[in-house]
Image 1: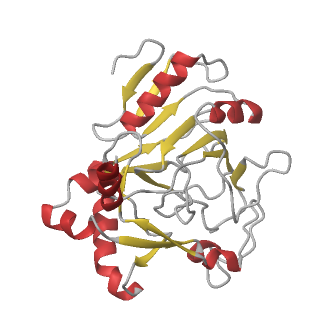
Image 2: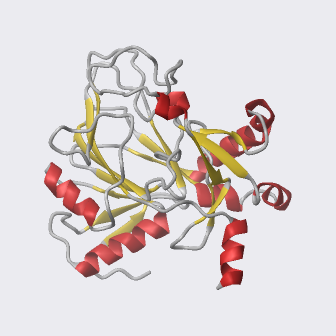
Length: 296
């Protein structure tokens, strides 16, 4: 696509682009349209040197849709749309929020379309975020594997990080963020293993190691072989990019076709970012998409 209002520079050959030549506090309709186009093309887009207030970030988020809902993590008191993602310098050996491969809130009936993260207080090194392109993860599977997984349904739940039992986030009380462990986290939701992107029409894998428990009709142990193959395949280096944060950097990624994780390699330094999400649609798989096409 040709861009007239922004400069778009891919950072790898498979995922991610840096957008320059724009002030996110002052956007017109054409610039917003071009940012969305770059976001859809590159899966995740990055901006540098954007000194946004919380209200600025909320306004930027609202250009692309309604705010998502934020369960199990206490939001900012005066800004319920915003999560302060913080790890303090003295939280040594503490679990990192977002430190496992995942797609944000995939346990929701309609998971967020996108997540926006803005750097506030970034360590001198470490704390990078890594992203994986789930379009390519699907497209590079063998024809036989695609035939197997296209009709499958996966069961998602918030149980592992936010349930009342042992948590992958650790059960030690955190000083920096309030995690709300709840029986509600044990609820389960069904989503297709392969998702049709509602804007691009491309197929993407829609499973992740944090929230995907098992395949429908199978136990967790029986599901493990297929799911582990998909998880390992999805995060091959060729499908990924790694973002080095700086203060006032902003990342916006498409949860419908990306996984991500935050690296926990900065003990002794504070890391703080502000997170907003954009509401999304209920995922649709190849089988339902075919039915819709026939009806239309």
